[in-house]
Image (cartoon, rainbow, N blue to C red; front, side):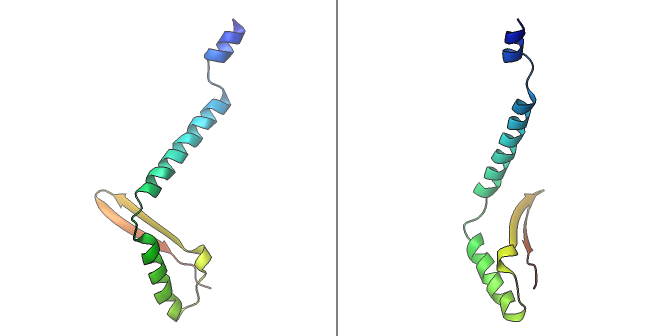
Length: 81
C-alpha cells in the first residue's frame, strides 16, 4: 500500500515546484503575446532620440507595457552611462 500512496497519494515537493514553474511560464507567455507589434520599433526610435543627447547603455534598456484598471502604461528603463 505504501507504494500506491506514494504514487497516487500526496504530491511531492518536485510536483509542487513544477506546477509553480508552469504557472510562471504561462504568465510570461501571456505577457509576451499581448505585446504590441510596434513596440520594438518605438523602442529603437526612442533610444535614437535620447542617444543624441546622452550616452546610454542599449543592452540594459528595459521596455514594459502593462494594462491595469483599464489603463495601458508604457514603462521604459534607460540606464545612462
